[in-house]
Amino acid sequence: MSQGMGANVRSDDGGSGMADRSVDEQKALSRERFAPRASDYRESAPHAAGPDLDLLVAWLEPKPAEHALDVATGGGHVALALARTGADVDACDLTPEMLDAAAALLAANDCTAAFAVGEADALPYADASFDIVACRIAAHHFPDAPAFFAEVMRVLKPGGRFGFQDQTLPPEPTSAVFNDTFERVRDASHNQSYSKEGWITLIERAGLHVERHELVDKQLDFAEWTQRQGCDDACIGELCQMMDEAPAGMRRWLEPEWEDGELVAFRNRHLVVLARKP
Ligand SMILES: C[S@@+](CC[C@H](N)C(=O)[O-])C[C@H]1O[C@@H](n2cnc3c(N)ncnc32)[C@H](O)[C@@H]1O
Image (cartoon, rainbow, N blue to C red; front, side, top):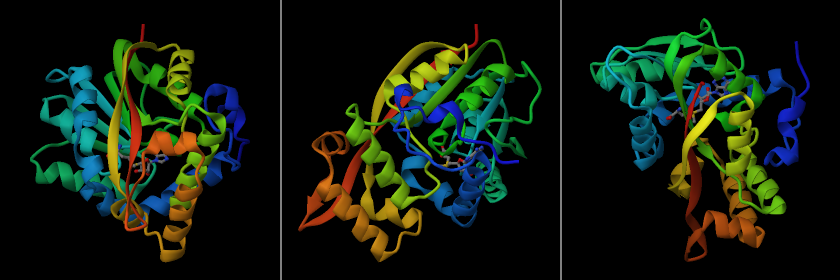
């Protein structure tokens, strides 16, 4: 049954307050957008590697035989990094095609994990069953981020670590709204991001204790970024025009690069967090 979007869209949480879909509509849209693009996300350079992924896994300090969960595993890059440390890995995602792509990535690297279809706000795992939970570059799709963080709290063992990463919004409210709108023009299943403070507030409200956090820049190639979501010429034109007319605060945040009048790249500022269940 569909539910309203609830408190997660309040702009005083550090979000843009823009999402206007039911929970079920948001999930259906994510599945629809990601199913045909599973192999593109597995091959995507900014997802496959980077100092952000290295930092996330280093902060989590996985140990052999520890039980780790990667939520919204996508192409499986966090699951693979965790499995390589000898951890016993579970990985879930809303989109079955993504799980197939992730399983193929791990198999090609002689690693294994247990894959399951699972929604971030209703994780299909028992209470207190994981030493580690990770979630990277996915929560901006979730229809109910507070419900997701509550689920992380539930499935972690006491003392368990949570590694979180996602994009952040610029500080000025107008630029923040513009930023999320820009993202939704490229990928309608983008629900909402939060500011650095907004994400941290939501994580702490769930009862997790944030121990470390850092902003890590990710440079995005505009052509690759639009191709990955199958943007047509009209969509690409709209995105270029939006960036050209964007509020100064958004341009300062994204630092767009232009060549001969063409948008070629911009920067995303990702928040990496290590939190612990008391
Ligand atoms: C960009 S990909 C994830 C990237 C991946 N974690 C990585 O580090 O490369 C976003 C993923 O979130 C999944 N997703 C979106 N909404 C979800 C939800 N409510 N519950 C679980 N997974 C969700 C999508 O199916 C998609 O695979």
